[in-house]
Image (tube, rainbow, N blue to C red; front, side, top):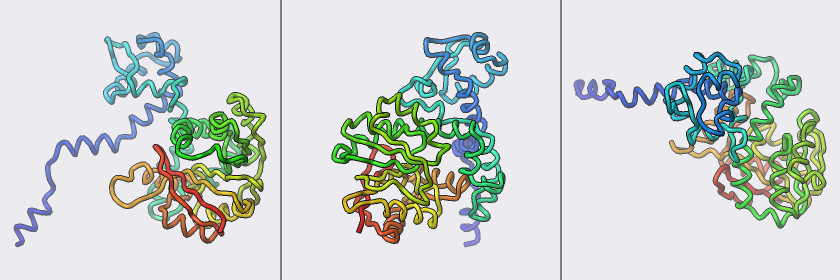
Length: 343
């Protein structure tokens, strides 16, 4: 029996797993992607291949160093060295173009404040508290309020993720039956502007902190919906604009712990009329090995702002405590829509 036990505990030699784990543990490629996004390299390749010398001149970088970065990405399928020291776009690199309908260029920002927080992940794992707060001595939201450049970078990142979310939810829900919707914590208005542009009968209210909504007018005007959208500044922990048909919380609730989430839901409940509904758009955690995206975002919440993604049972309990009832969960190609109504 001792020999059998020893056999079971002996590590397996699996070179495929070794290579795969090396790739997963590598942070060099993600950092390089973000640096290349900041330089706008993919945009310069929109009209066809270019030599590193030309790319370096246009991006004001060192040619040999840029060559090393592009070769590192090309071996992962991001860009291709079609001729010696000449590069072209691949299907992955296309997504880094600013003009791509699903552009991820701004989603991959490189914010030193985030990097420092992730370098202290061990603190969050030991304490359950956000590493961001420990490193910077303040919450993410307080930090962004006093760092306008990072706040704008954060908003652009959220806007980049909004594009696929809009495509996913526009067809999954009967928005046309609603009249007035409030986007609670709606950032610079990119998501609400997209909804209003797709559904001409809708009127909207963008609601977020003053420094967040300050740049919303340009977003709303660019979408041609400024006349149908009111912008109100305030804290959703205190009060929410009343008398709307629906209150949308897109990736908002999971950014807060249970106490904060309950306070937020109660503020929304106070604003709701008898026929109003609340619509959460956020990841739902499930058990098992396949729930990758939600589980990763759940870890992000732990490190960055102390929130967490929840399952249906947990949301049902929160809704109940806030005076709401969870009525249905509507799947989409991205995050599900969790619908609730007053009791």
